[in-house]
Image (cartoon, rainbow, N blue to C red; front, side, top):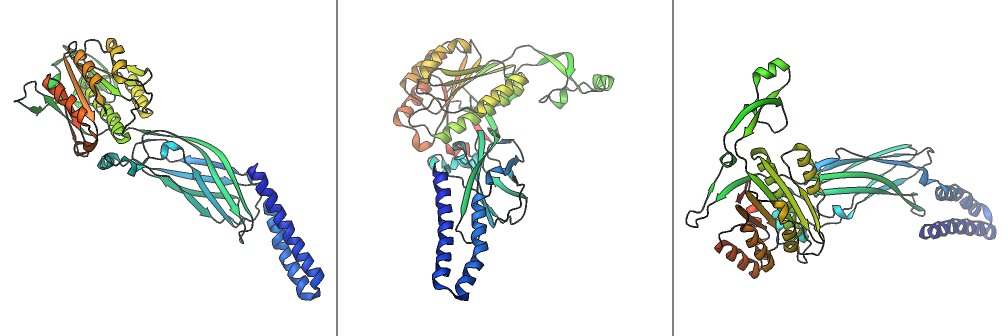
Length: 423
């Protein structure tokens, strides 16, 4: 309705301009008046033709340099516009219509310097490019989307505006051009520390090899991504003309379960939540390379949970990573209540690590109950140092006094390379 009204007003303006000039020539008379009328007539006809020009018939396409990137990276976008009629167009303004998911900026680990000021990373992306097509039928322009945040982003439309040299006639059309851009969470470098039970002993750096026992080779199989160079069986590789690695029988494996809290709390710090996703993926990748079994459980509000039992498997790991890519804080339910319902899924694992941005009394009670039936239970709290409330500090002290391992990651720890995590 608005476009039709604008078109009608533009037509009325052009017709009124013709009528005014013609009336002036008729009443004024003389060579000068009619010369002015006829000299301006081509310009008026051009404006009239521009109003009737079928801009909707343009063919607009978008091409991304990469459709899958890591969060914080950039992508180059090419816009191609093709038109059949080479009608002269003085200027053309092309604007990308960005989705709400691209309002955030991701600068990898540097973004955690703003954990106490997360609004600093919110922005309204506005990319406009001006070209002068004139008689060109094919128009191409490029721009870059930088610091793309984690998630799946749907680019749905391109807004195009054209006009005449005098700025009297302007036209606009939104072309529906759909493309999907996926930004996987960044895997941050980690250094794991083993937390000793005795408080006077502190903690020490541990190699992931210390948590597994010696393996015994029982066969060979084809090489898979992640296999160590030392596992290659060179005799079988030469015999079968393909890379073969030794297959081991684990004498005793360590079962690790990661539990990620993605409930939508009223005071949720979205930067802290992003850190929990990155830490979860990095832990999953680290343990997957060294341990026998690794599982992932994500719990959101309103019974919004997902369980991935065997992330050691390549296919399940890929599915879990895709799940973390599109994960958002959701629901208004209680993480502690849902965690109780999911306790049976955890089984009697050797290690359970709960990653969250929020602590309360109910959480403390649930964790203490879990600690009675699990060999080793750790909690990782990710939050800005200035946002940790007094009651959360009290919960941390009580869990520490009960022998629980609670690791608090603030902006001071998250900007380090590597990030030190105590378990």
